Length: 365
Image (cartoon, rainbow, N blue to C red; front, top):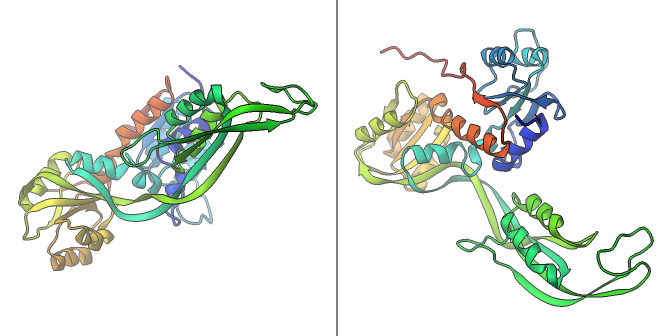
């Protein structure tokens, strides 16, 4: 079994659900504990409840990775009955990936859309539009292919349906190694001229750290020269919810039964529209505020949780089918994916979904 730290788990989550994607009102990241603490066992859960913390303590877990923040708004006191106090007392760290995990590609809403069989899902409501970066690096000509390949492997040069897009141009590089340098080419206090290649590639902000690290790993120079520019070429869009198309239209009642069969929901609350359902919007958790966005995107139905009475009335006015499958059922679907991603990123790590992580509501027929 490999030894990891809390910081390693944080970086692993950052890799597939960057914390920079989180909404400004949210509270994500390492909320309890220290990044240096060792982790031999971890749990994933929707919430760091008292029961989940007791389970972590009993199983010897030093970390819980959750979707909902254990600390959300300002804390004025920490009573003994609070999960925050219990986590600290148990020596259990808590990392929370909330709206960043909702928004991330492959996150809550993509998993939800996939489970319902939606084709070609797209963002329901954009929350960020971040410009691409252009990375320019200078390397000896004989090393250009190695540097290029490393950057491509790390995600550089992806433009639409193309991969490995780059511009290379030749020229002469000049430098004089000074005392204390350890040059791969040239001698101390001697001006060196090198046949170099300039490599230019577009990189998404999320891929930028990995691309730079990969380039530096293979670059032969002791101190490679490179530039990073913000471009106006395109932007990476991210946002809440997804909207996609069913393989075949369904009447609203059959679509509701389809949702019930795919999600861990004990029951559904529904408003049925008049139109057949072919285009569907989804938003894990409490997403009824996206009804108008769903209507603008041409959806005939929205699947979400925690729907208030006024949203039911709004759906009726809009003629949309609205399905409240519950907060838990529309978000717990991410836990197996979160578990797989952590295990793939941290080979040998002992992680499991908390057994006590379940919907606290009981539905009475």
